Image (cartoon, rainbow, N blue to C red; front, side):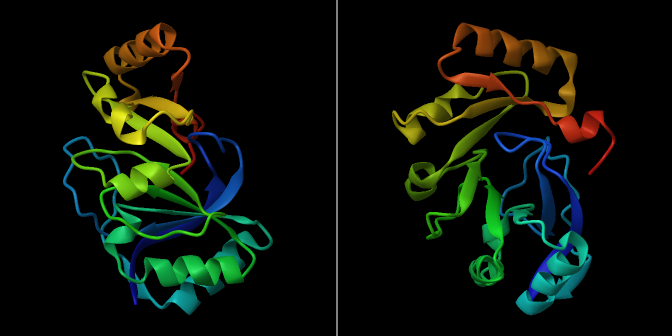
Length: 192
């Protein structure tokens, strides 16, 4: 059984895939306790892997993209079974993770890593994109963990606070070879 916070159909508001329709599966729980976390990932329901896939079909129809998020999706041991079941159902699976729990993933699974307190080398090596939360500073110390690969690296201002936005913009302008400004566009247009 999976502990779930919510499942909903919307549009990706962050990162490389911004603007793409997707079914979001928000798994409950997290292994970290970040003071700036803006996500309600409390458990609202328990569902089997099969029931989650059925709900994805019901909400998203033929929408190919499913985003597993949290909390931390990999804090639940059945998340790997869910990924396999969604892929078997013809879905393109994207994961949003803090990168602190090492998990083997198929090459066709998109992995966004947003490091906070710790990061495993395996997940840093597997990342397809990086999201750094700017909260009073740019946490660029994480960059070394990802090596020299030219990964899209988004600076996301915490809470869209003006001071954090200014920091992120200044850092992106200073390092245009490495950083992009990453805004939570879904919040600007009033959707989940």
